Image (cartoon, rainbow, N blue to C red; front, side, top):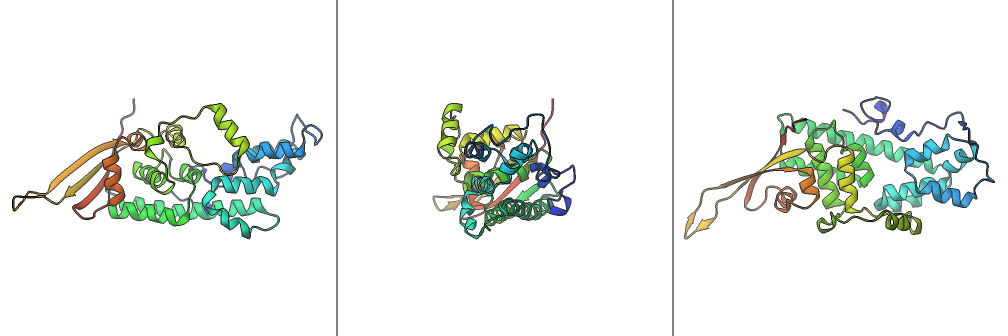
Length: 289
């Protein structure tokens, strides 16, 4: 499975420009409801468009010439960029005065290609159905160097067709690199509060823990399971060293996301260090009803 830009048209992967509908605007498009500039104030229309996802912006842009012009606005794509990649907002200083949509698309393609390389490596390391924690942590480190946002993890890693190790790597990255607090995982924001927050600060949108569970469920990977095994150096007891210990735990992505398996998360995050001699993650086959 390749996420490189050359394969962006393949049906197996829709994490590319076709997913966002970034080529839908060719020809201008038409609509039964031709909303002219007099139908809605431009500043209000821009505010509305800036709250949408990139795919929705492109779909809306194909409705009429009025919306096509608004949806191609640099201010819209700057807002989309800031919302998707908040940690890379500093790069916006290098944005051209025009062409922000192209800037957004090129960054998406670059990330897709880079994540594809990580996916290839993980598939190679886990050919036997399991993976050593050293490789696991290297994959997460590589993702961290790309400064992925939550939307990127959703698009590239939370995919049902991936093996669960890739799903787990994406979840681990969200928890430890995007700073999702475990004790807020079950926190649910009411729709009114969420809309009110978007309207007051649509750009600096921070990731809410509930988003992770919603995305895991919507991507149909929440019940995927792994078996985490770790081997610990035997403790000393009255001058004698006890036999080495072996522990293993089968956990689902839901349990990890909800903070119910803190010990397992800790082992995965630390890796083989100090008293832990070896950590291995194995895919667990899920049965379908």
